[in-house]
Length: 187
Image (cartoon, rainbow, N blue to C red):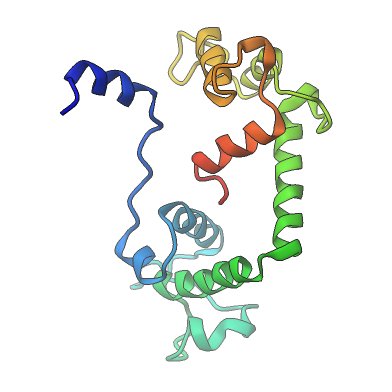
């Protein structure tokens, strides 16, 4: 067995554990992160109906009416919505190939450009200055306030992302992609 000192230092460098999938996520073979995205999408369209929990008017969703509202009640429940979205996620995964890779690359380029050199997706690395700029834009540059980040935290983020290559090395696009995958932003 490892000593407690070794396990505590190893555990401090591990990323936070991923959220556990709910019963509904497991039934639809999706991750907790994917379910969270679906819930967010559902909440954008959800209109509470009197006497209904998590009701959703069908409206323009004629394509999915049979799956979303098999009893023709005029609304979709959250579990039915998850089921339809899960089917779409699985179809996108199975399609894989160039379409998936092109879509992922476009998403990566767009996200990277938000951080690197003021929107230049061709920048070689996300620097400490870039992270400070983003923190200021998001009003997270106030260390004394709740949610505020210090320069030390930003430096640690860079070192974690680039495997300890140094703060000056910044975070390249491939490393950024790895961070986003580990965070569950995309798979």
